Length: 313
Image 1 (cartoon, helix red, strand yellow):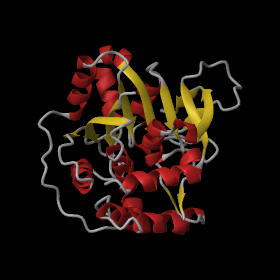
Image 2 (tube, one colour; image 1 turned 120 degrees about the vertical axis):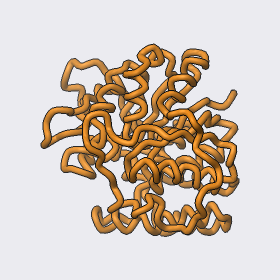
Image 3 (cartoon, helix red, strand yellow; image 1 turned 90 degrees about the vertical axis):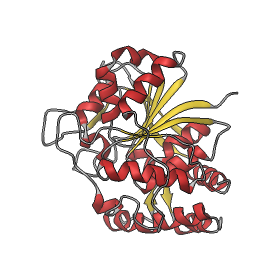
Image 4 (cartoon, helix red, strand yellow; image 1 turned 180 degrees about the horizontal axis):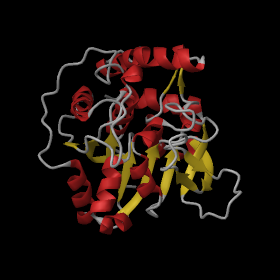
């Protein structure tokens, strides 16, 4: 079976970095056509820089990185330096990237890529706010039917919010873009906090990364060392959840995850619940299902996959 063609849309972020590393370590299953950066965890100048740093860390400098939208479609930008640190990749000391940003805007790259590939052969993998995707769909609605699938990290139901009491960060940053995406009709797979909070990097799991002994393994362990201090204090958990690698792990081993095909609506009006993913988990409405909303994962299998693939880099 040929590798699945994907575009990774991202705002790195330590967990975004691990998701990118997993994808680049898995060329048999995943063909990364390009990485599109968006403002989110940190401002755009840093997310586009971090994406290139990660590509070089992976030993994949040929990976094309495109710079996208620097603010949400209808709101001021909210960032998360309190979680990810000032650079977004606090933890390891990594050199500035040598590879350059591509000249083309990320939104135009997404549009052109979907137009030039056969219908149903390109998957979009957003790991951050959905600004680039929503903007592309609004600018070029003809591409919507071309998308094979969207596999995204964002939202929550049972775990409710991590940036407000009701909303998960990625959706909260740009709820207008999320609303466009969830109403698009494209098949969507959602990795909400309900799943990602079960992907906890415990001490033994982080030791497994460090014991790979490579530059990549040590960097990932150091990222998690930094990243976990926030979540341990906030949730009282045994480690940091690796949110975004759930997206790329799903592309490689979908059987690690289970969920329900349900309706998901995005709140865009109320300041109290702005960005909430209203997930009809119990099928209490007659709204048409529009997303596979994941609820559980095989955490041991997930971390085994991560350690095995990262050891390839």
